[in-house]
Length: 73
Image (cartoon, rainbow, N blue to C red; front, side, top):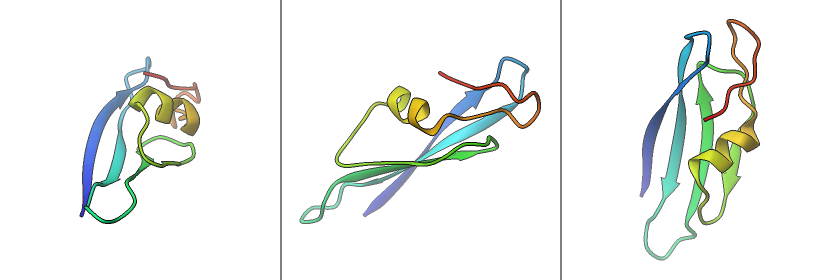
């Protein structure tokens, strides 16, 4: 079963968005985490089996649509 979890992400200019994590932790299938951004530009991140939120955000390189700055945790 895939579980979705959202984490808040905020730029220094005040723009707010989220990091969405989809996690497969069902038995008898491969465990994975898939990360994407909501409200920010940037990529996605897929990892088997796990990584930290900070590692995922660094890999996605989120940018703020308001000021254009790179956002980190």
